[in-house]
Length: 192
Ligand SMILES: [Zn+2]
Ligand SMILES: [Zn+2]
Image 1 (tube, helix red, strand yellow):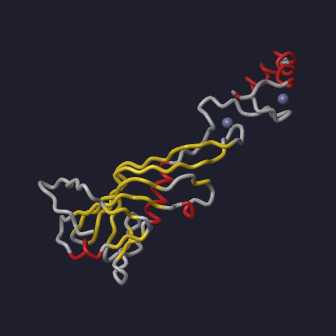
Image 2 (cartoon, protein in one colour):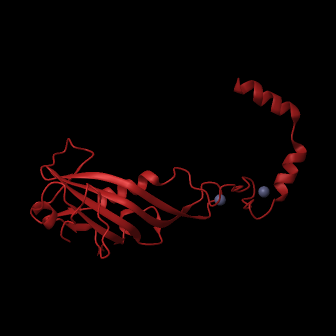
Image 3 (cartoon, protein in one colour):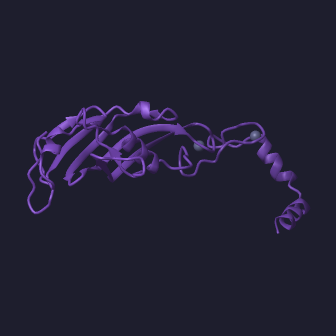
């Protein structure tokens, strides 16, 4: 994983890129290289343990680039995808989604201290960086706050629990008929 030579500051695309399969990335070569050197990996990571509240359905696949700086490294996940399954907030059925990262960038420092909240440390004893927290934070950032099984999920009936995506229930029909126009007016006045 020697730092790839680069021309005009552009990352050079190489035909053979090493695949990174663990969340610890060895950075010895890069640390020994000069400022401005770059390296590239393709990512094929098992990240399920980082997301205890989600069902992770694929490996994190994508590519990672690194740039040697004066005080450490800048790591960039150029593009990556992870398939997960969560629960629809309306109907409580399974909801599949693909989390996508694009140009997620973080600094890793040789002399890190706790005040540098945006950056992560480089383990100078092992000469590696732990990508876990970087990857975890970036994926949570692209996770939607409200997850639906489909954009127009109709939810469930609050009376009988019928999944309204699969058809209406009797309570709904009854409610529509019994709807009191004066109650509606009262509710409107209350809201003001
Ligand atoms: Zn739903
Ligand atoms: Zn119902």
